[in-house]
Image (cartoon, rainbow, N blue to C red; front, top):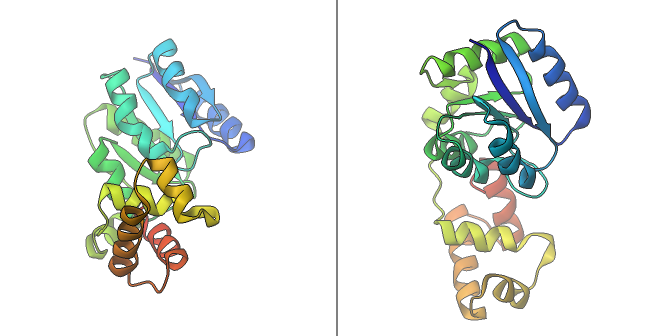
Length: 202
């Protein structure tokens, strides 16, 4: 059996290297590569891969947000997260969304190939060091709406900007931001945003 793989990775050199190295394996074949998150679903539907390798930070759409959409678009597909961001919060979100593996880019490519085969055999595969961290890491204290509002505050967006973008009142946005500041133990929303990113809560 040949395992069909789609790679979603925004860095061109990394994308090409992964495709080349995986194609060297007798039982693996890369059927498509994309550089943007908002290109993934169309290519999944076109190529019907067995496995989709997703980076987390992709232009257009986050790899974490894509996991359930990929599975819904092609139920027989397995999602493997491959990222530089070894954060327990990201691991939790990925697995809760249906990803079958979570690996970091520092891992040898042989480990990636082996993980793909193990996933197809029904296993869940996680980078061992990250798995150990996740056992002691604090769970994400933010609700989905709080995460959305905090993420929208990036780049110096004003309260009015966030309210308009998310179709909320300014008082509601202030309440959500105040909650995120309190839950992250931050002094202001910029610090809350930084802490949430560092923990993989966004």
